[in-house]
Length: 166
Image (cartoon, rainbow, N blue to C red; front, side):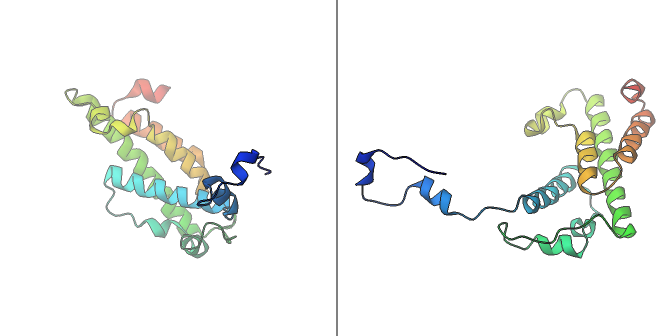
């Protein structure tokens, strides 16, 4: 972009402006940032629901693992459409665990009315974990319907039929 400056600013001496520094930066490779975001979301879900048996890097193939350790400005080979069935199975199991833990946390917070979940986790206000898991399924190449069906089954199994019908 062309930055027009007034004549008074042209003769000013001192450090380089933040705008000029920003324009000199290399452009990031957005799919690589998106790939990092998926990892961060997975790590946050593991932490939030205390999922102990999940190994986050096992949810990615070798190309995906290598991409995590590259500069965000580099063009990297990211996982393609063809995935190992074992990795897909591990991903699906992970998403099912997240949904199950989310429903369990929802039920336990409704049973213990004295302390709401929003008071325990104020930064998660309005966060819908099952919906987030369904969105994450798109990135992980898992069918959203599998995640949504499991969510409905979990709601019915915890006696929350009114939510399951919705």
